[in-house]
Amino acid sequence: MSPTALVLLSIVLVSCAASHEMPPFEGASTLDQTLKKDGYATAFEIAQSNGCSDIDRVITTTISSEAYSMSLLATERWVLHGCGRMYPFVVNVSGDGEGGTIVDVRSDL
Image 1 (cartoon, rainbow, N blue to C red):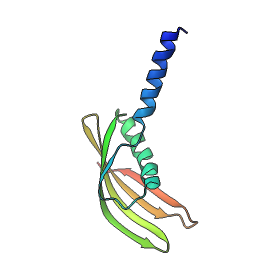
Image 2: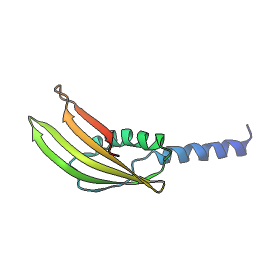
Image 3: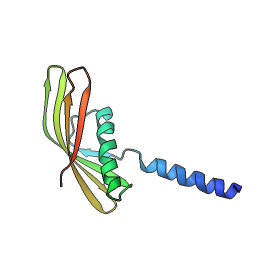
Image 4: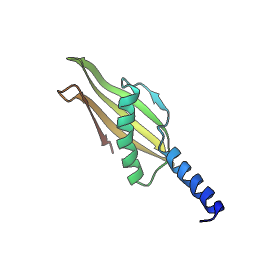
């Protein structure tokens, strides 16, 4: 492969990796960065399966949130904005009973 082709391939690969970075979250959310990252990964896959790999921002709204037995129980509405469209989701977060957390992301169409 020529040096020019290698440089172009490198640019394409870096561009693809950059498009998967988590965009800014705006609005009310009770989730920490780790939980947002976990939820966003699933929401991004769904948006990508609908033809959008370029999400600009995520607008969040807390529907409910409470601490229960050292666990966070939360329901949020996320709207991913990208490719000229909006992709709405409901994100439910709950404890798994063993010290971990379950992040359930569902399309809200």
